[in-house]
Length: 355
Image 1 (tube, rainbow, N blue to C red):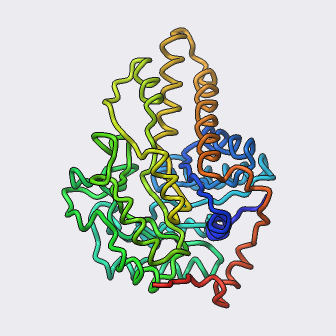
Image 2 (image 1 turned 45 degrees about the horizontal axis):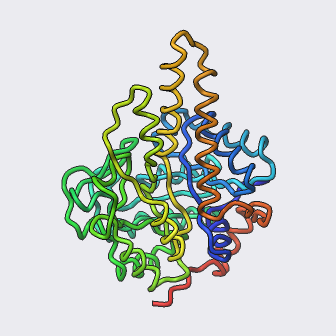
Image 3 (image 1 turned 120 degrees about the vertical axis):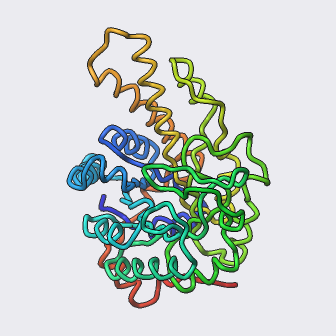
């Protein structure tokens, strides 16, 4: 099946009331594991590529992996998404590489560390939207800075994340400002700051309203009920994955991620895309550690990678089922980027803002 834009996927998810996990991809094994899970449960797939992944694998390799995904899984709609673009060059080059969606994270400057001003965010996100929509490509924006409400700090991941201590107001998206941001930038989806963060160490205890602001999400949804919201840094860091990792020699301190029940609550209030990376890393490396510990004479990399892929496939399949995207792939007929560009141009994809 042809590639699909994020906007088409999220419009469908909004119509039928489900959410989509968006998994980060760095290599062939992750791609295969994610796609096998999607195919098994008839779910669309969002394959996210960070700047770090593009640097690690190289644009040519990433491009060929995505082509291989289309060839190997012809019945699965695939959205290829640039995660956390740090500037126009990153987003423009992703579009030129064939990505069907880009995220312009204008909450930070191009160094991907320093918080920007609101007007700078609006300007750079608008520039990306103009370039992308003319080519039928979707745009996700971000308002507010990802980070922990209990410590006021962000987590660096693949070189992306705020440094230093931030004010609570910077770490929570202002609902009224969100309305203005969407109206001015015309983004297709909005990533919001609500206390989630990158990495494994998201919360020092099971999160409550003090550290995970579901009320922020609900307030934005009440103002823009048709807007597609995105939860970043939303790995659940399951206890069983932590236990498996540590059982085979790991030393991961006790930590908490975003509970599945909170994600499902978010889906009821307009969350359509949920970013997941850490859970995949833990599943893979836990499997690596088990093989290394129980088969100390093993040196064939495939004997490490096959169980790691199986662990990731099992995890992804579960998330597709939990978020309600299972069974939705066969209900979709991809719209080409050429047709999407025409729809953007005639105004039929303009965001409806009721506030």
